[in-house]
Image (cartoon, rainbow, N blue to C red; front, side, top):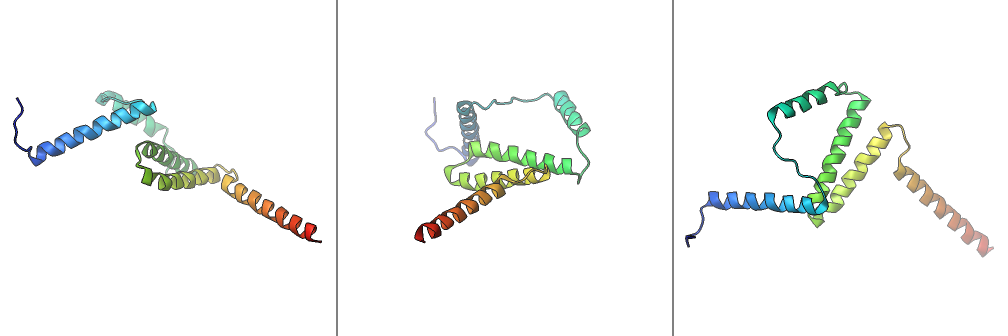
Length: 134
């Protein structure tokens, strides 16, 4: 039988934490994101050791790329849980990280190419305007 008294602060916090975890799980399921359960310590230690073996030298180009890719992954995950007002900022961050990755990989940035195309279109429009006015 339920008591009719107000719960204490600790109980309120515990209930809020439980509800938040439940909502996160349900939202992830609706988006098709797999949920990871508890990982045994031996498995986690083996994964960490493997990750450290593959770790590039700090300060190298590969190290920078790895950090940027990890950041991109965290931004993608944050986008799945973000409130609508947080989405534009996360999208800007994602774009900035993607541009940095393309620079480190030695590719020309799509953002620069897009600006070049727009500038070229503006020049062509202006030249058509002066040609038709003559």
